[in-house]
Amino acid sequence: EYLPGVRGRIGWRRLGKFPTPIVDGEIKLESGEVRRIQVKREDLNSDKYAGNKVRSLEYLVGAADSMKGDTVTVLGGTGSNQVVATAVHTTKQKVNSVYLEEEDDDRDNALNIMSVLSYSARLFLPYAGFAHRIRTFRTIKSVLVNGEPIYFAGGANPIGAVLA
Image (tube, rainbow, N blue to C red; front, top):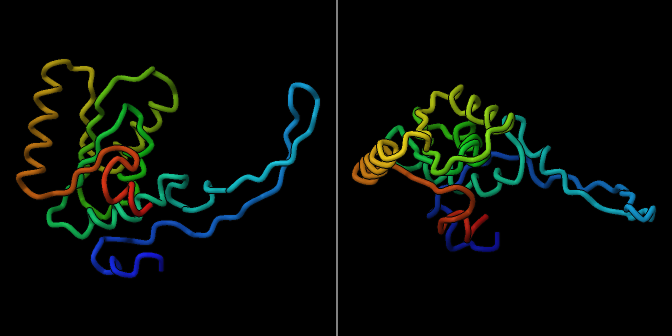
């Protein structure tokens, strides 16, 4: 609608249900004062995996799915929501999930890692030191040589940053 010149030239796939509702609510401050707030319910935008990642993934996954190959590689921190959301929403048969840094061990990270694994993803964890760096480099090099899509977490790429 806003960029008609790019319609049909950039991969896109509907992943979410938009617009999402805005609901009224109240919060009580420590002072006892009550403030009215409005909350945009992005948690309702998908039955598969919802949240703010879905909007940018409509472009990222759409672009990845339109490229050759059966693999998408997504890079992020351990337990990254972007990695999970990509594994859930892509139509690619294989997902390389390359975790770049060790984060605190917690239940959310463990659940996200298990979620990624449940979607037939290959997982590369940062705990192996130098061997991990070599494996990560080889994975990225292979992906680039084969022309398969690779995405960094969040909107840190032209498609996600410009269009989402």
